[in-house]
Length: 328
View 1 (cartoon, rainbow, N blue to C red):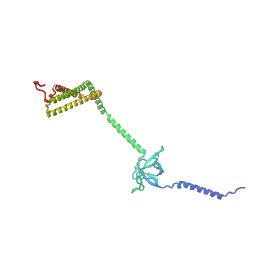
View 2: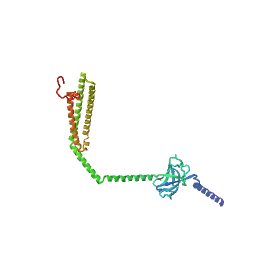
View 3: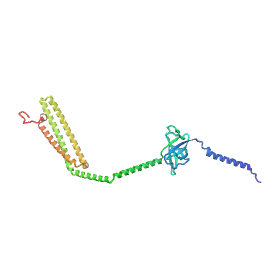
View 4: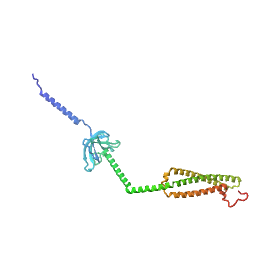
């Protein structure tokens, strides 16, 4: 026995199922996005290669919209006019910066937004149809600028090195080295004379220090003997005090001169390489200085000997004749 099929019910079921499928499709495509978007404009001064329509717009890495249109600015062909659809509520401020970001090796670009979020909200200016977000250089642009700067610096450095190592500078440098070689050789030949001169200076300062010590002792003795006589006047005592002060100053100067000569001698012994850089004109001047120093030493020795024999000569002068009876 054959079963009877109700074709009306089958057709109604097919119609209802098809309507349900169409409703699901429309709900997924149109009814799933209930967000409200605001439009903004960005003028990029660099290439936007890799940026396509519907490209992602991110604010600090969070997706907040998409690219609506890309075109050249009719008034300024050197910049690209990009319109963005950004979710309402996104903190787009006056200090917000839009940059291009390329992800991965595919070259697909997106728009990255960043800002402090503390400035006033961004609004369109008079004469603008949309608020304009400031564009910043992308990472690729910054790397390109840095690389160009490095190449420029390298080029400048190579040019300077080329000028520095030119034929004229090389010849002058070679001549300078030859002159230095001649000067150091001449100084090295006179090293014995310089060492002897330094030794004479050391001897001179030592003799001056000893003579100053003996001179001070002699004056002290003379002062004691004269004070014992009781015949000194007030002016004579003041003069004697000044003489003592002068002797002490001479003694200190001699000691300082001795220390200076010792330090200079040590410096000369340890810095023979530095002495080789002196000019030939220095040696005659040093010889003249040593001759004058020797003459000064002889004069001081005579003065010290005279004061040891007659300390009063410093106050009353050198005696003109032989001492009389009862005079020393």
